Image 1 (cartoon, rainbow, N blue to C red):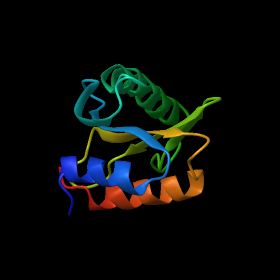
Image 2: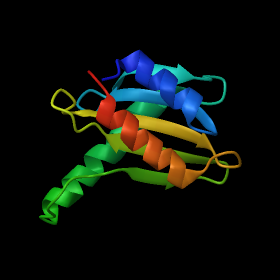
Image 3: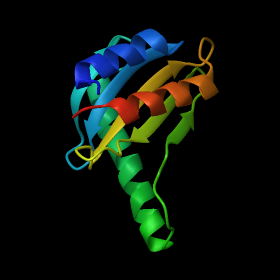
Amino acid sequence: MAQMESALSDAMSTIDGAVGVALVDYTSGMALATLGDNNVLNLDVAAAGNTDVVRAKLRTMEMLELQGTIEDILITLTAQYHLIRPVTGKNGAGLFLYLVLDRKRANLALARHRLARLEAELEV
């Protein structure tokens, strides 16, 4: 199983187009670890903001009485993809991985696949 810093480093080095990645606690909105170019994107601010996205989706699922869990949330911008993937491991409750991709250089399907693999191997 991969440690936090190692998992983030793997994401940046193995996912084409990766601009930044963070492991975020959505109960507090705090990034536990970040890696990437903060000149392109402030990952701490993004982590806090995307905490609201995760919370809103969880509330909506509860109100609609939807079964199942969130696999990932995709936000597409004109120049970037933003992927949010909740951590499902035994120590991952309340955490999500946040990945920012350069849309011109990224393969979205492959990025989702690799992020899922990293999430499964993540040791918190």
